[in-house]
Image: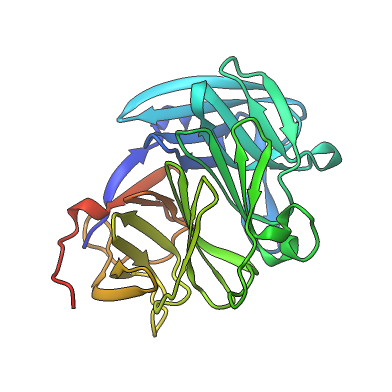
Length: 304
């Protein structure tokens, strides 16, 4: 099974560094570009781009089905690691180097900052939907040290007000680190360490926990009672695709396949996927190219 190309940053931006990139809830690809920066070594992974001067104006490039739009974000004083689009043309950034732990910044359609708020430490995922929900999921360094991150999974409104935090029921392990995440309208799905259950959370607070036999997979796409899980399994192959059905209590694997690049080449290393309902988006070493897998085009085998 092959990925298909979703979006490519046009060549006129080749001279700019990509500070952050994602695919939003509307399927648009977002790149935040820095006009003048350097690569800073990171002890925990690849080097990260960093502006040479502060404050700086970052260029937001949006690809919507191939149509390119631009917008400047003015007077940034921190380095964004994650971003996402909010309704009404707003944008939220999760940054390092923010003042007073206010590490989330909301920008208006005019490119001016409207609000800051504390999102917590060790953010693994920050994703918004089209209905004014913003979800944040965390790693162990935040869960064990920060009161916001301690829940492991938090829901905010699109103004940055905390509305809900996860609390495991009796007999279910708490969240240590969220490894895979998917957000659709009014619902989030998470797989987390240590026991790797599949957690479904509705925006109204309803929580459903299911047993998951795949283990530590890397990304998921969901449509109805079908879930595609990428990675994990007995040999933990990152190119292994598991087609699963969900019941009230558990996940059942019904088929497996190998996921490849569009040209059939092996899928090797890739960055953390972005799950948006039935779509799974991912890129390799470069954030300038995004690929997509659509659950709807995957054949539907019979149930076991």
